[in-house]
Length: 305
Image (cartoon, rainbow, N blue to C red; front, side, top):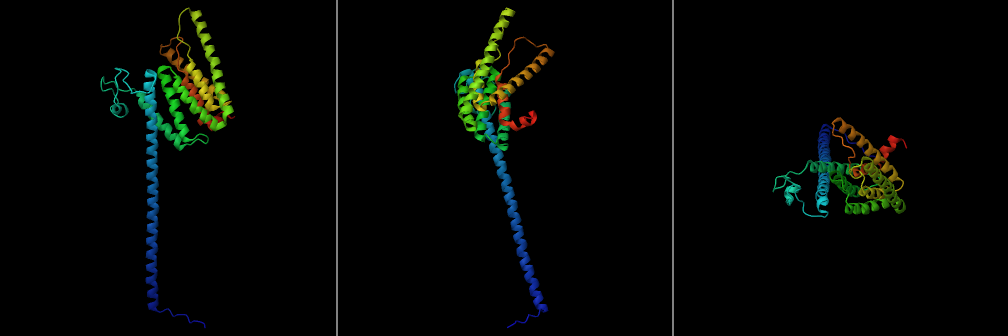
């Protein structure tokens, strides 16, 4: 049986209008709730990103504190101990050493500007490692590598020392990283290659210094490259492997040469030049290793190889 369509009277139209308003109200409420939910999710994501950024900053600051601590105690004490004031040699309380006022309570000696530079640099580098992840090196290994290289960098600049215990820790770390990146044979060959190449340069430096002493007939300062630099080159060879260490050492030698030329020009211009002065070599070896490790693609683009 075919039904007869219902005639739409004025009352029916009024009922239909009310129904449409009712359903439209619920639809509008649903849209508002959905929009607010999306807004809350966006705000929550922003807050989480801010918390993450803050935590990474704190992690970098802790790394800088640790590098400063090692750079303060290892050259003078050769062991892990309570930090002491370099002026009066008295112990510095942890609160004054880490936070504020960062000066010795006994003699009033403030900590050097190096403390702030290292901590700020560590924060920036840690943030960079987190937000620019390396395709080959995990964040945790990059973080530990920064701690080791940063400690060597600071101590060598201030004391012209590369301590053997620090090098042993670095060798274990770089051996593990190298094996993970390219396997044991190339890692070991890189370590032996770095050690051998710098040993030749080290012996050449000794012969050159002794020859100049005989020629000048006076004592001169020791050769600029020490045996610690030789060991550091072996450690970096474990990190870069073979033949990567040859490229890293080449970059380090070029960087050292450019810096030395600039230093000599400034020294002669200011009349502060003195012959046979020495500069720490370790920081340039570190720079030569960092560039191909973290900026490989940029170097390939620049060199075109």
